[in-house]
Image (cartoon, rainbow, N blue to C red; front, side):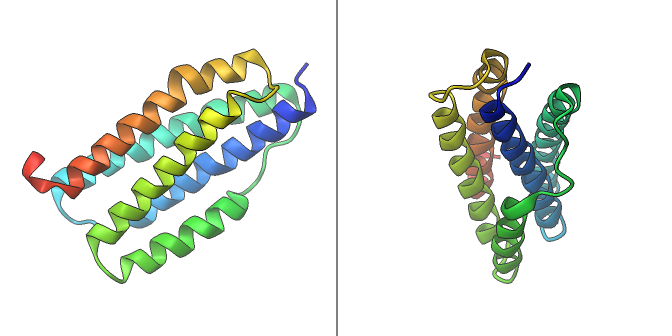
Length: 146
């Protein structure tokens, strides 16, 4: 049985992953270049996979699944929506900032009192994924690297 703290963290992470999916969808509406679009699609798919992992954890625990991305989604939509007004580079910078923020959040969650199985997912899947995403966005921001 999951602790209350673990359940709350799972819900928060799930909403963050949904928010990331929404952010990448918004970004894909503006980014037109083929290599960048392909990279962004892959990053979005990674977040979809992570969200599905946490959705399953929440449904298995019978603790209820959030129906939206919550406050993280609202913030992400505002940031990406504003960045869209200024072109591709601000969009990529906003996505990178989100990835960096959640890398720090995941690292902090590892220090909390939550179930070991969730820590394992964060340590083995999410942290490496966040690092790869940051590197990928850095490459997009430096087109000479493509």
